[in-house]
Amino acid sequence: EDQVTQSPEALRLQEGESSSLNCSYTVSGLRGLFWYRQDPGKGPEFLFTLYSAGEEKEKERLKATLTKKESFLHITAPKPEDSATYLCAVQARNYGQNFVFGPGTRLSVLP
Amino acid sequence: NAGVTQTPKFRVLKTGQSMTLLCAQDMNHEYMYWYRQDPGMGLRLIHYSVGEGTTAKGEVPDGYNVSRLKKQNFLLGLESAAPSQTSVYFCASSYLGGNTGELFFGEGSRLTVL
Image (cartoon, rainbow over all chains, first blue to last red; front, top):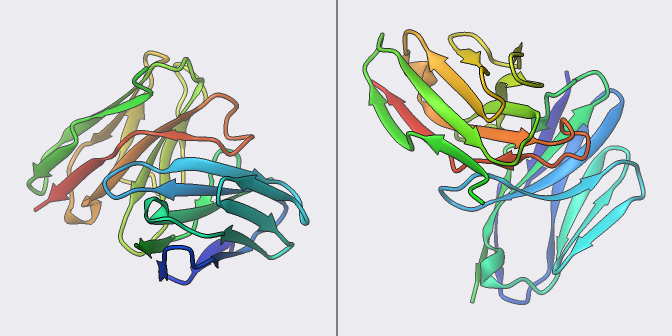
């Protein structure tokens, strides 16, 4: 069964303390892996798409990487405004329009 | 530019009642989606549409119906609400059918079924 898991479930960091979030997936024929950010009471906001192992994408303090079984979202010198839930999703070649989302990692960055 | 707008934002229903959630997008996107989000679980696709007049089932379609009579609107209906349908519902749209992974989400509609 295709699935996406994320770890840790929750993470508390001090401002400036770098860390990584993990997204592990099992899917037949990965078409793409996507990262979203979700603020409380809001809808998810798109961050990155990764298509193949070895690919990396960066945006401000965030960097996403992809291997054949997992993806990491690295957060460098985070600020309190980076606090949010980060969602990972995968699309398989035979899924059509169905993205499989992970449960998310809730990140809190303390000043 | 409003993006994706959902109404209502909150609703409380009694078991057996019916209701419709409305999603409107002003980005001229072809593809529209309805997801539900429950605590500890990922977003799950209920139904989607690849263009005006089309609909298709997602992962968890039972108990829901949808319609896409106009390109900019996607309606989600519950004919006979059940407590298991208590959830936060998100509408999303995309230009390229998710090929780039970029879905634009609304702010959600929180539904409680008593």
